[in-house]
Image 1 (cartoon, rainbow, N blue to C red):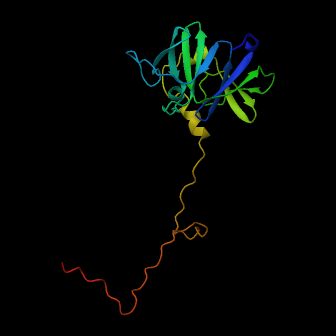
Image 2: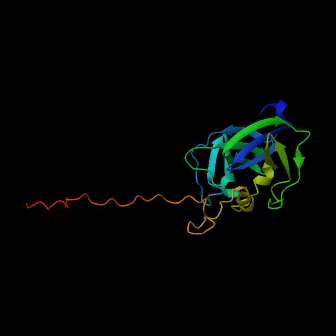
Image 3: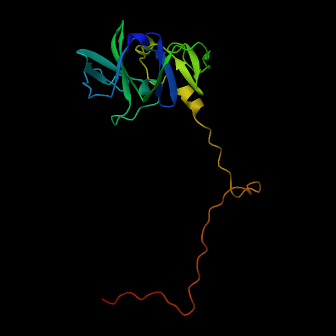
Length: 193
C-alpha cells in the first residue's frame, strides 16, 4: 500500500460476511500460492509461504469464521506485517479500499464476538464488521461467526402438506395418467432364439 493510504480502510469478503480493517499493516494482496505445511498445520492455519523474502503464516478466515473458502486456488491472501509477525489472511475477495469514513459507523449485533470485532460500518448497502488484523491473527478456533452466518441465511418456509384442505395454492406434482392399451394390441412376444 502507498504511504498515502495510511488512513485507508480495506473492505474484504469472507463468504457472505463483509469485513473492514485499517490498511496500515497491509504489505500486499496476493493470489494464494502453494503452501508449505509444517507440523501443526490445520484447516485454520493451513501453512506458510514466502513473500518479499519473509515467511508468512496463513490464517484461513473462511475456516475461522465458519464459512470455508473453496480450496481450488480461489480467493486472495492479505499479507500483513504485524507486531506479532507476518500473517497472510485468506479471504474470498477484496471489495474496496476507502478513505477512512466519517459516518456510517454503528454498534455490533448481538451474535458477533467482541473479541475480534469492534463495530460495524454501513457502506453501499453492506454491513461490514470492523476489526484489526492483529485481532484476527489471534483466532485459534473455527466457526467464530457461525451464529451470525445462520442469521444471514434466508429462512426456508416449511413444506405445505398438499393433502391439507388449506393447501389449495400448493403446487401439486403432475403425474401423467397411465394410457390404456390400444384395442387389439398385445405385448410383444419374447424372441424365440
